[in-house]
Image (cartoon, rainbow, N blue to C red):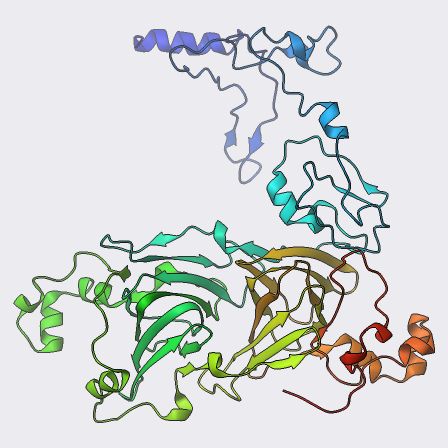
Length: 530
């Protein structure tokens, strides 16, 4: 209903002095001073709020002032209305009806992994720490993150969040119909601590394309499943075409244009960029190059008539379906062989990591790639680790680079320590991104019943790390003994070599890991290397 203008003013004035729909009289607020002491004043304390609700609504949007604590005869919550029960949370019977997981009653500083997967009512309890949680809560997330629900007693201080499930990222769909694929990303919007690197998870349907494009950032890629044909040309006009499969790598320097087409089985791959703020949506696409330049300029540039461009796409194609590849790889290479020839072998944009045997160690395996073996990726280094159930990537840190992680298979946990006193423990599942700032120590422990596979990506010209155990093993024993109050018998077992991975026990309540239990670990071996 509309009121005449003078009536509207009168109604507004009445709202300033009388309660509206049971609203208590407005409180008195101090005026907010903007600018200099003599500047304008803003006072919105008396502006009424009396929005008209939907048809069929009933009751008061404001509660009575009698509900204020200490206001005298405040109404009990159960009297708010016969059809509007108060929210009291889960019943006390439900809160008390829980079972502690194995290890949950052990002292908090022991920090055993808590397997809450079968607990119907997981609780934030570890040893004598914590207490019950009546809710509301998301129990599925709590079961996936037991070290956040009931953190180890060793966690302390403030460590930035180091986990992002890629499955929580919004997946951008391809174009043109026919389910050509999708892409989802992680950058500092999702994981603010990840300032040096960002990641993209991309899927191309069989024969689909990632449109011709280039970036302002370096692009490093690991193929998760399927296969691709990549094609590119450098600043000298030297061409490159290669077919890759799951487990292989590619790298395109910033500004180098390239195309990606899936094989007949389709493909999914990870992309890592050396800019934490990188966005997949800001890629330089060839369709946009043509759409954002005048056709006159296009005709002059390509030496043709403007009618050539009458049927250009009206929008970017991004990810779109294509036809099967024609001819062999050698025929594809020959078809793009210009006067400058092909890219020199030592500048190859791909590395067939899938064909390389891993370095086997007790508890798992390691594959390391850096510019010493993949020269064009001049500041990207990667360690690909497999960790058997119960084993762990040893406590270590990197000297010159942050670490971007991606978990490909299984589950694990990581404690990040940043001196002098801060630490925090995170739990990861397949598809999660992790991020650890340079020089912060960490380990990766397999907490599941299958092999854990994950990668560490560094912005460094060499893959380098420091092993905590090796460091102490190569420090004069008197210094270690008198600093940490450790027995010489233990110090004598410290390794002189880097172990990368240490074996463990699939019983996650185990606390005795004496060297004698693992005679094949060769902890003091002085030979061998990647």
